[in-house]
Each structure stands twice: as structure tokens, then as C-alpha cells.
Amino acid sequence: MRINKFKKGDKTKLKNKKRNMFMPARRKVCRFCSDKIKTIDYKDLKVLESFIKERGRLLSARSSGNCAKHQRQLTRAIKQGRFLALVPYVRI
Image (cartoon, rainbow, N blue to C red; front, side):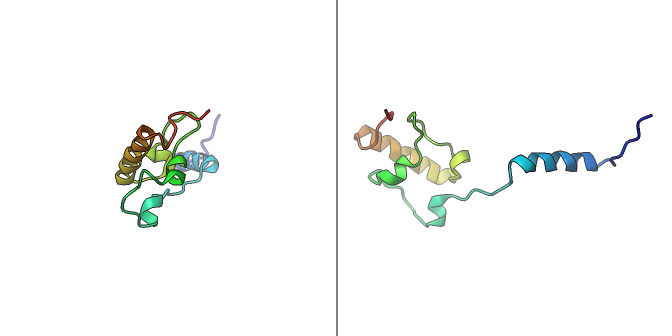
């Protein structure tokens, strides 16, 4: 005969504990909001290249931690830089 060791709410706590064990919950903060940058310039190559993967794809807002406003500005700036040949489309 099996005896249930857990109460009703304990199972969900255990599942959450296992989930947090591998991936600690940490709030990502928008880098541009914390530095109080209002606009993102397409000529600032160091900033733009830090948000581009090796294959040339853009980092998502979820992985980079940008807010929606700055993610849109960043995307627009990267596309402008690519068009003017300041930022490569694909890194070789």
C-alpha cells in the first residue's frame, strides 16, 4: 500500500523548486533604460554588434533583456547599419 507523503500544495512547490534549480530566476534589465539612453545610433558599431549573433541574426528581446521600445530602435539601427555597409549581414 502506497502512502502519499505530500499534501495538496507541496507537489507544485517541488516542481517549481526543480525548475528553479537549473535556471535561477533573474530579472533582465534593459541596458539602454539603465544607462538612460533615449535613442540608439546606427553609427555606434560596438553596441550594434553585441546584439548580433554569429550567423547575422538579431538577438531577441527575451534573450537580450531589452524593453520593447529599445528593441524596436535597435532593430531599426541594425538594419540601417547593414544597408549602409557599416554592419555585415553575415559574419564569415
